[in-house]
Length: 121
Image (cartoon, rainbow, N blue to C red; front, side, top):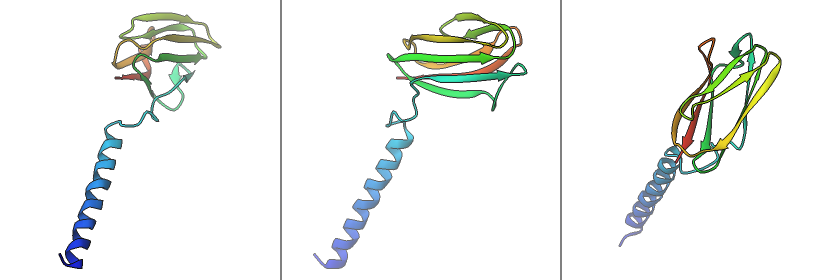
């Protein structure tokens, strides 16, 4: 086998390995995007910085705190948990991540989405 052919085969193998690594990381092969805890801050009845996207690992613990400058009911959809928050206070959702999927968290009375929580299998 010629040196040029060996170099070409080696280069092709490197390309395949790099492409595979990129594909695996884009498919969620890493847990670095999941949170241990998250906080959403509400000002003027809206989430600071827009609707927050946060992810937790299935069978782990969901730990989400909502700090609000307005009184309302915070509803964690999918898990169907409701908690009243007083103006200037916070509520904490800490529960087992038993269901995977995407779930909205909203100020129920204002119909204002605060977060989109993803529980990853």
